[in-house]
Image (cartoon, rainbow, N blue to C red; front, side):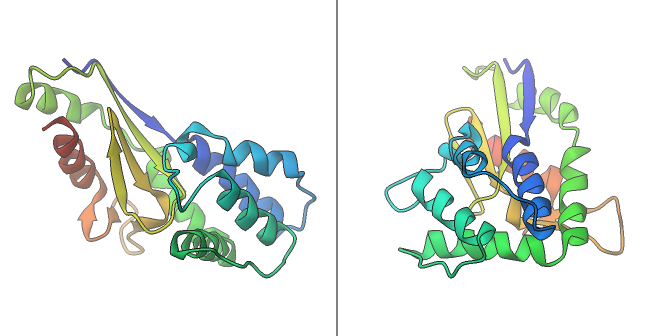
Length: 179
């Protein structure tokens, strides 16, 4: 039985500060970049192509306004997505606000009814700035690529991931996790 659905915005919050600080040309220490690259909400996405060093190299290049030499598509996409966030911080904030206000408590009852014998007491939804993947599932965690969040510019109450409304998207992916 699911007792709790937790939303984790740890790495998005850290990156929001990074984007703002770099945009304002503040001096960020390399230690901060190392701390970001070691966050569990990012390390869960690491594989043979994209790892802690990939994140560190990309963010250091952005901070120091250097050319980034990617080793693979995932590193290149991560770098480009981070540059995109800094181009228009007001749009970035439009992406962040809906997930900060996101309340998924209403999903718990329906998931418990549909999957009464689940072994998970807690599900975690992690929004993380990733690379090419829209989402992935690992154990009881649904990891969603923050860069795929699309606010509706006409309706403040609507936010999408891809073409699907965010709560519906999360419900579908949590059902995939539980099945």
